[in-house]
Image 1 (tube, rainbow, N blue to C red):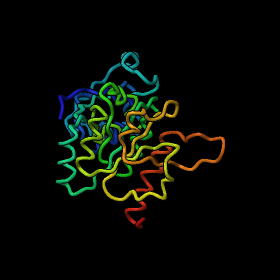
Image 2: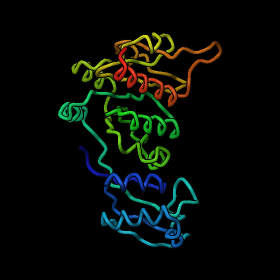
Image 3: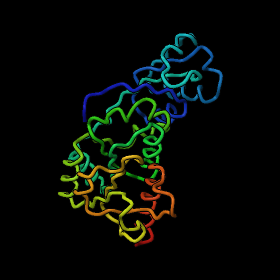
Length: 249
């Protein structure tokens, strides 16, 4: 694991989920009127139980700290340790007797799309998301807020994607790129260790990645539609994999 860093959480829903999970917070800033609603009171109770300092400040002072909204009344500073080495993560997955299940994000943009992918990943049991090191800004306070905290709860690996593919293949993990010229996803056996490569809707997956994956898979589209939103595509694929694991191919 890497050195800790602080991520600013500005969503009450995300704060509540992360506190319930026992995540470590350095402090929580609260506007003077934040104690009045039920959700805030629940957050304060959990923070107190976890010995997280609550600093009461004026609304004006809180507004100066807000980055994504002017209406939130709480800001939490969470200690983030979500930065994994791929080999260490694989060791952990195998120790827990889980099936390796990864998403690889290649050139994804826009916090809303990334957050939606990460929330789906957490909900469906994906146990690792791999991104390029230069894309580390994908995990921000905004991403965590939109994903309701899920972006900090799915293990994140920052490494060269070509090296990641090599490591995955060394561990007999099949890597599928989502590409319009691929085989229909429901005709492919997705059971067992799998990684899906997802690209941005405008530029898609880089040619170098397409050359290195095991196969391409696609979602059938009616004429005139080139692709779905990347988060919708991710949802279809991860739940098809879960269906196949339960029902069989």
